Length: 280
Length: 290
Image (cartoon, rainbow over all chains, first blue to last red; front, side):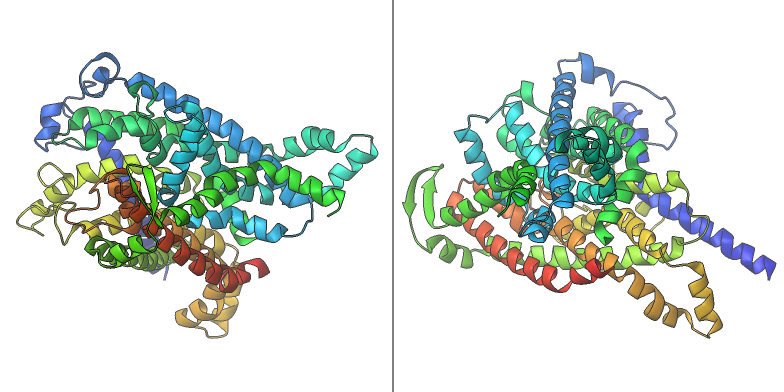
């Protein structure tokens, strides 16, 4: 009896390991590949542990005038756009989520559903008119235009996410603050927001992550090389006949690793918020 | 409308303005454009239903429609069944490891560009590792051009898409499974319930709302894909991976048939609204009861 139980346990552990391996191996493979030299990569001689580890795929990204040139500028653009989107979208979503959670008005449930429902439409369908609107606002080929679009893409989802965060903060706390003479805005700023801070942080990080990886709108609206974001910068080189895989892998790793570092500490909270929003 | 209602709406104003400007207005705008013919975005001439007539005789449109259907339905089936299976397998006491859960979120948050580049490198016919492994273990004798051959391209992309969803889907179902108290299993087993009865009367009713939510999530996740397809195959070879979103993009920004692109868009939007209403009417309710 005892042995059959421990055999079962070993089998389950093995299944978990295989499953996790399938989830992460492509990332690990790209990471390993990026430390091989170009001739090894181009001959398909990549090993899990690089025989002669090298940084030759990374260094040219920053110093060379060949291949992916303005890489540091792409990083900077992605950072500016991502952070601005995170700030804007979490403000918009915190206000919206608070409104949905605390006030009763006609059509509230429909509005709440709409925050998710709009994601049914593939954004590529809307790209053409959005492009026109941007042209009308003279925001084509500008960071501000991209920031606005990225905010519009992330904010409704974050509003939906934050509503459940606000719902979990008891109304009585605010009411007692009102008794103490604080007005509505003061109560929101001093009492509710600090309590909802973890939720707002999740919203901000989600917005940053989605902006960091957004490709389509950036590709339509940005034409100057000096304004390109990371996805745009590296994708440019995938359309060419001869792909310089070495720098490509280096660029991929440098685009992806910062994202992981920002997201991982919050992954548990993100999942929690997501699931609460889904089942409640 | 009293003052309190107005204040509530005021809080929602910024997000509503964004939705109107970036979702609602564009949706109406493409419906309008679908009745016009343009040359490079200027000289709009009203042509009535001409764009639609052209589309119905257009092979690319037929291919996109069929591919979108295959893409979405197969994706949905795979992405609901596999995570349910893995979640049931992983629903063990020891599986509370935060690091493992964090690792399972990684594919989900990976930007499409990164997925596309990874897929292209790993699936490369000559230097990709997958062909290398398959050749070495003798499963195949000649390298497969996963993304470049007519028969393989669509299934390959569907599987890539599914691979990306499985860990996240598993986490969602696991979360639902963990709301079932252990004693309930034992109580039912004592009453003589087999694995099938457990699944039918205990597990499925409990994870039902989450699966309902995942239907929505996975549908959107699959149907809307554009950049992963564009950056791997551009809809090719010979329209083998051309889906409706890819066609909309290509007609609008590569061949500049704005009217036709908008007509495809309009047909898609109308179809999606119908599906959306059906979903929110019949599948969303059980979630609210939870």
